[in-house]
Image (cartoon, rainbow, N blue to C red):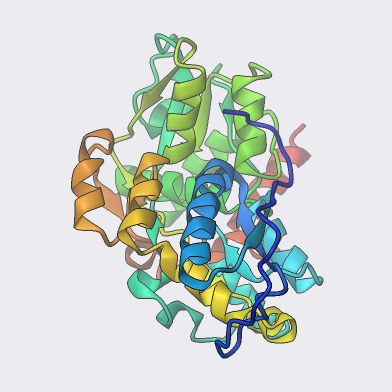
Length: 344
């Protein structure tokens, strides 16, 4: 597996010659193309999903399809679509980033989350800790990350969806352990005082930790942690904290773009494919937690420990409130980071 930052293009066969005769689909004389704008750690997942969907689509319609992938920090990816990146679908790290597409230009419908099962989240994940082999710093839980001499790698919450999940998981831990929002803020401030660099996305932080050998602990998506363990198994260990957050990365069709490009039918089918038995199996195989298939959930149960998880709605009143209080300009992260930079 490669951890390169890149823009992956998956070309398939040249299109066949007859018309499909299906409403909303381009003619079979044209090879249909889709662009999936996603967040950082999903590269490997969508390489496999795209290949499987292309085979499925070919069998169903006789039409070939080319699927391009774009990856980066989730918030940065959402901004790229708002600024004109011609995504047919977005598969981002958090609902707030897709909400931004609805409120800034009407790129997606306001009811996007009601169009697919499980609030349009075909898979879930959580946040774990990745440490050096043998765990030399003895890191067992969130409070170990604020100790003097512990270097923490995590991306920038202003650009990365994964970083926001990380931030909120740490915040809720601090709130529950120390008893108040003010104490939670102090706790998170101490944690970020131990962060030497903020990459723009989760994959960048993964590279910083695993390939550049910076930091003692990497706050990571669960699936990214498994990928690191798979590639660098002799160098890293995965630690599950006592409390973490249920991450529900959502997906949506970019309505304005698919209407203009004539790709709505195939884009909708592409996202629905994520909920099929085959799609759910590929999701589990790539270390995401299948959201709907009991068969896939049972098959991959052993690789996913049962955890004490809370949801964004339970702890923070949903993404709109969390964004406003923590990640908007002047929110808690800005206050913490501005104070940190000013103390240097």
